[in-house]
Image 1 (spheres, helix red, strand yellow):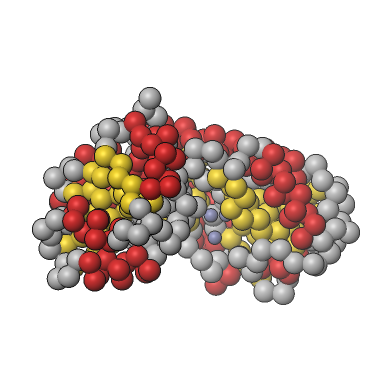
Image 2 (cartoon, protein in one colour):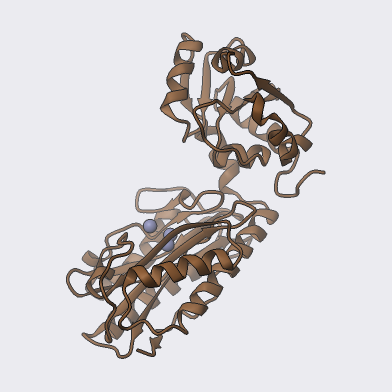
Length: 370
Ligand code: ZN
Ligand code: ZN
Ligand code: ZN
């Protein structure tokens, strides 16, 4: 039975994209590209697993013989492609090179281990190696309605975790202890993995990628909660909310009001045709006009799908026009070193005539019971 998330024409479209990018074949190892193309969720290991997709449309999935049954029972088994098992004493690089055949350029999936890449350099002498992403990015950026539905499911689950957090008493607990409870909630909500848990309390909130520490959360702290997981379908979630514990201190509400306005305006500006960099500027201009521009120290967002961070990146210098089906975060932040920080993040999908926010948790400033 074919899975609607992995339409059977996808391989043919990817092969055409490879040809258009001047690539004779794609060598796709375990990771998001392989799952996207075949539905096969394989572990990246030293034993080579590789989809050889030639630009003429020929597709062969080469797997360790001991994993062949697993590959055949995955969605890849329903695609009608050949699945070849290699034995422990065989050379999988020679096998895949033979499947590539005569070639000038091949594309390796962007996250292929160098371990494999250098073996192919030897097995494919004189063949130029490029990134498969140059061919696959256009396809992966534009989500199908089924993929958008999967991202919507992921968002619903992670929204539920934020709803739970707002009922907790945080004062007197460490970030690490609260983070453990969040990780449990992420899995209990229906995710298969916890991708990350950031609990940035008080001054720690001023470091955007602070994760967890033994700092005890105090009354009066603003706390940044940035959390994400992966659903059984393989799609990622990512949401940030910043709450205040007990009472607002140190002018945090004024900073938060600027941030909320910036995030809302950027979400409202999403529509086909606006460039990624223009969208970044919408959020940044609001914060700059409030005199806080120097404290918004990262891009406005990143694409999301089978990977937590993927194209398109919502950043100055990216002239990519947004198109229906593109899914990305809008997550401006303001970080005052030594004092506090705040970030509001939603996943937004570009639609035919605007944008759809997938995360629906309140963005108003919430003061939690201490
Ligand atoms: Zn980040
Ligand atoms: Zn995030
Ligand atoms: Zn994010």
